[in-house]
Image (tube, rainbow, N blue to C red; front, side, top):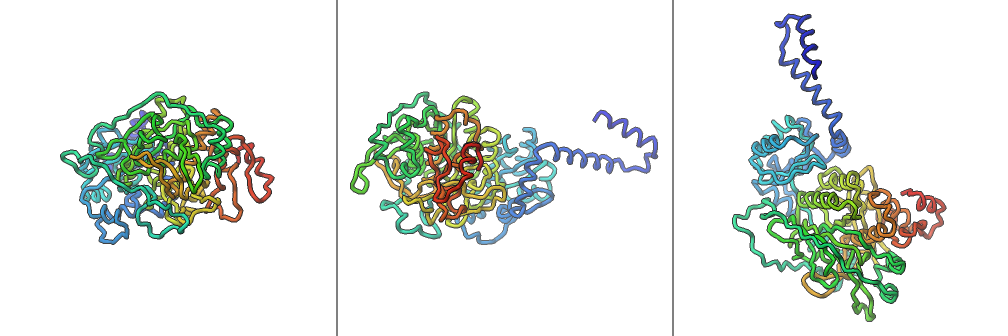
Length: 544
């Protein structure tokens, strides 16, 4: 820019000043600089939005998610979903604004002032700022008149996320897929809301993170492995235990409704806990997160199942758990709570760079797309922080939920005891043109695991139950081969290359097949009823 004065002097020397409107010159230069900024600062953000632009209204160059714009602009449409209708009725909203490059703090607070809002969270990973208590009319005005002046790339309302196992799904699963006991939907939280409660305020206190440094190790005996429950046998986890590989020194981050640390399967397992749910501590007052944590890394316990004694164990029984609560006692949360949870995992990883970690997320929203903020955060965690992220495909029967649509996520379908894809399991190919979903499958029908706030176990069904199986397998992989740390793409390729494929089931139902822990650890070729000579090459050299 130091050459600009010379450039201006030359122009003024050739032409009379009267012939110029200097404002036009500076406007042109300003536009030129903006184009350079677009070129050099996160042009991948715009490219990603452009790839999925059918999901957006483009207003003055800003990508506004279509349903968000319908709500912001005051549309009287019945959205057919109670969460969306409730959001549309609010006068103050939570909003996620993504920028081409993150502004200075004073600019962010200037935007908050224009929106009549408060700044809730700044995410430098995806160039996003989460605002709370945003005035709806001011937001509409900001989009129409001011957003393009602040290098805004996209705008999303802070939609609801939830456990996929909803109490009243639009369709019922097949009868054999429904557990005999109902899902654990108790809401026995007796805490009172803090004084001055308002929606979207976020956690009323500074989030508390409790870190323990040691995890009690258990020895898996041969009789426990040989008499393990069907789900562990289907994925050959019991064969890996016999090799004395149980997930030692690996952390599984459970982003869910919290974890009951006092359950026998989980006591002493949790090395850190934090809550991003307004008004709730990290404990599980719902039951979903505890159940998933038990599947991923629970200690073995013996139960009487169908008339015989079996051992129910987490896939990686010696892995540690990082409890990141992003869903509340009702099983619900928001895009922002999940983004903040993922950001916390990244910060934890930065503080513990030598500790292998994998993320397990049994949650989703039907309101997203592959370029939504949570999908972008998942992709960022994988690409930039080198952390594998496992996500449920969802239980929408015929579609994939977000963030299961994220390109770099390992998206998991659910199968039953016979390896058949469950009727409720989200089916692909999804709406991500870059990555056909789901990626892999795991047991997700009538899975026994820890029941929160009791000493009991409970069976649950869903892709939520399938997801921690895969996270557990990754923990086994990371213990067996530490060179896989910081190589999430290689882990995904290895899982897919060694999965047990069922040629009778479409790939858009089961992905690469049912995850096979033993084959992945041993880097064996894909097992299938059809001879596949390329399987050896894929397994040995990392083909997907």
